[in-house]
Amino acid sequence: MCLANQKGGVGKTTTAINLGTALAAIGEPVLLIDLDPQGNASTGLGIDRADRTVTSFDVLLGDATLAEAICETAVPGFHLVPASMDLLGVEVELSDNERRIHRLADALAAYTADSTASRFSYIFIDCPPSLNMLTLNAMTAAQSVLVPLQCEFFALEGLSQLLSTIEQVKGSLNPSLDIQGIVLTMYDARNNLSSQVDADVRTHFETLVYDTVIPRNVRVSEAPSFGKPALLYDHKCSGSLAYMQLAGELVRRERARQAA
Image (cartoon, rainbow, N blue to C red; front, side, top):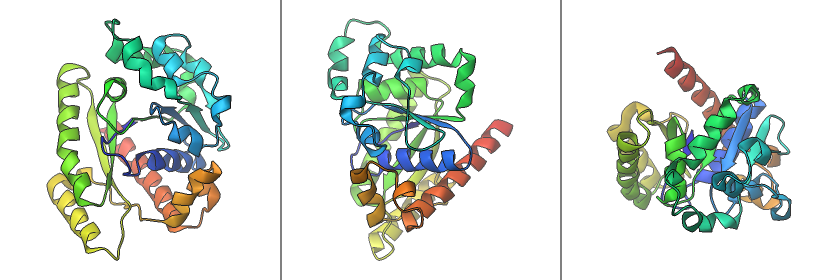
C-alpha cells in the first residue's frame, strides 16, 4: 500500500510512521519502504543518516535486495527500508533501463517469493510529494493507494490530479491498483474551513473517506524531532489516539476487502 499525495505538508509521512506504529502495536507486523529522498520517515523512526548503509536507492538500482535493506526500528514489529538523498539521482541512473518504472515491483516480487516475507501483515511505501518516477514505481508495485488529505482548500485542488494519475497507472501499468481510502489530516475543529473540506470530500468520495479524522496536534508535530513516532512520544495525545483508531479502521476495511 503506498501513501501518496503530490502536495507536500499534508501529513503523508506522519501518517506512514504513526499508522505503521499503531498497527504494530496491535500485533500486525509492518514494513515501511521510504521512497522519499528527504528521508523524513527514516528520520522520524530514529534511523540516523550515517546508519543508512543500504537504502531504497540501492534496491531500485539492483545493488541490494529488499531483504538486505530492511532494518529494525525502536518499535517492535515495525521494520524499515530507509531512504537517502541518492534517490534524487535515480531517474538519471535508470534512464536507459527498460523496466525503470517496475524496479520496486520487481524487488517486491522477488522478496515476497521468499517465505520470510509472510512475517509482514502490511507493507507501506512512503512516496515523495510529487508525481515523479519514484511515485510511479510505488504505484506500480502497490495493490492500493492511501491518500492523506490535509483539511485545506489547496489540498483539495491537487486531489483530482492525483486521482487522475492513479487511473492512468491502473490503465497502463498496474491494473490491480485501487484507492484504499482517503484520510483527512490536520483537522482543526476551531476552523470552519476544516469542517467544510470534510463535508465536501465526504460528499464526493463517500465511503472512500475514513471515518477517523486526524486532528492538528502539537505533540504529533514534535515527535519527529525526537526520532520517535507520536505513539511512543506521547501515546495519550489526541493525535496518537486518532492513529490507533485509524489502524483499527484500516484492519477492518482490509479484512472486508479480502472477504469480498
